[in-house]
Length: 388
Ligand SMILES: *Cc1c(COP(=O)(O)O)cnc(C)c1O
Image 1 (cartoon, rainbow, N blue to C red):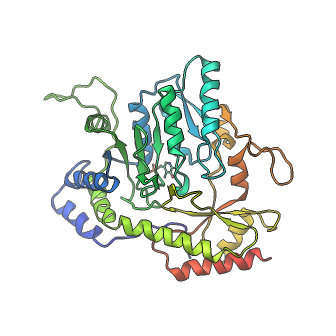
Image 2: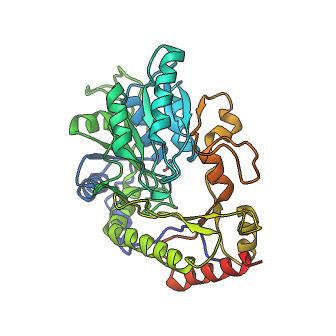
Image 3: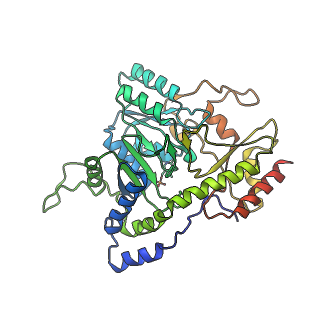
């Protein structure tokens, strides 16, 4: 079976975990947590990382730090995984979804500004935060997103869960917003088995996040609380795995990029398959997952039919994230569509760029442990299946 994105061991995980066990640091916090944070800071070369129990927890604390309160609205990219926006609801706030641009598949800056102005008109106040996402590792248009957010004084919580190692204008994703969330879930570019981090802009914010993530316990000899806290810190054992994983991070990112190149070259001559690529020299995706678009004019199978056919041949692929404006649980949330795409290929009205991409897209096996041969197999089988 060729899987979508499996954990890839770096080599020293067992040694570090054994150390953690022998030192009896089997608790949240500990020396490996501190070391993992130092290594993240060094890799990102800006910001202060706080290691947490999940990427979802990181987004949640980013929103708490941004001051999101019950009754607020928060703008979130619609084409994403539900973990980008569930924490908005945890805060008692209301998500407002914004469509994507065709070039990066991420937050469309024009629609973002339209949505901000319209929400101010409808509710009398500005959204409390903006959550852009770097989908599949592709950087969002962070220059424009930050400029628009800055114009209205709205904090940005960047969902960089899929984009560790990606760069926009030479700067690492996760370091643009007031807060940036990373994920180290098992399928991500590096893993701590489960974990995440919130990147803060300064040590003061990071200290506040650490305080909130460890039950908001005030510095007194007894347990004393002035604030609602969370149990969101990363365990020392998980961080031991993370310390081993991060030693190989630059190689892992290069390997995912090399896999993307193999797909790009191998599928270049296939009419009707388009490999999603960096739209300009400003974006440098980590290509966490290589994604393709299937042109229904040229290929008679839907992405899901292709997925099933590949599965029968032992190859795991995945449809794109189904946009949040198409999820029953968010049916009452406001949604702002791009005017770039009004209809699908048969002329049927659709909800925008996100739905158009969802109808055509497929994620290919992209784990850094895949061999060139594995990737060549996927290319060959994909060509065979879609040739009909
Ligand atoms: C994985 C992911 C998350 C959540 O991270 P967890 O560590 O699984 O909680 C959030 N947003 C996006 C876009 C993701 O892919």
